[in-house]
Image 1 (spheres, rainbow, N blue to C red):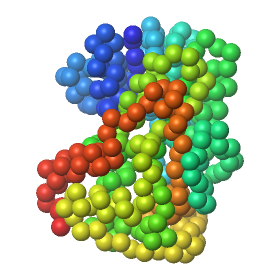
Image 2: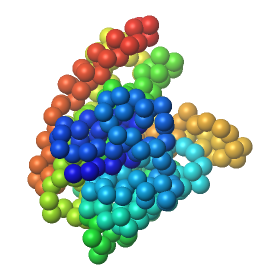
Image 3: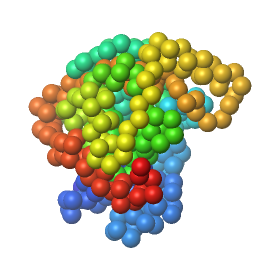
Image 4: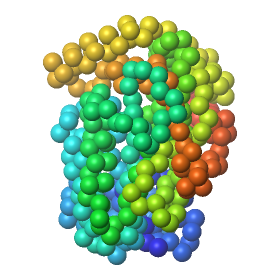
Length: 335
């Protein structure tokens, strides 16, 4: 089987390359723009195809004679210009699907995000059938909702099979988002604790996500299906933080914030940044407040039943692996 992976030089991409390379009968192609990282991959005997999936010709040429495409590439920040999100996440996905159809690719696995479920109320055991609100909490969420619609609409009644994966809260070595931000916040001002950190959250060790995507790529008879992916271990947010910082051998400092005050501050900051077209990202956004301050857990029973998904690593095991790596590489940042 010939497999092409977009976003292959990113956090999740590295683990996808490792997962799909385990079967030596498969030919795995890393697709991306970063030539330097591409050359590093080639040293590990991974084929690299330089290109941009927002360029229809480049992605079309890349998927010629490919059997399976994993579209994991995306603009994945919580703040930025709508035009950039639309081009990368909506038009880019459209081009990937179009290329797959014209070149006769057998299956496309699209990596979406459960951030599309995000709201200001507690939500437990959300299933894939959850009615997605017509929300515009941020441009990333809006673009992912639209991208899913593109995949579903363009592949309906087509030979191309399509499967959508919604993995929640990825963490692990190479993460540049969740844990590094929390550690940085702890070192500077303290970790924001909304509603005293009593809300339940789902997170997922990155190797488990790579496994789930491999299953979505190889299990038969799942065309048109969507799957939630987590570790299946909902935990109280404050408990996760205490557990993580204990493994990091660091003292955690909490900065308690009232939910309604935090929401009001986030609205003001977002408005200020938009009004004055400021660069960078507000220190607090509505998405961040809702993510840190509300319960959101996902029902993964469908993935367990249909895909046979069973996490290889528990959250504690994943944290231990990450903490050991962090201590070895950031000894000067320990408290």
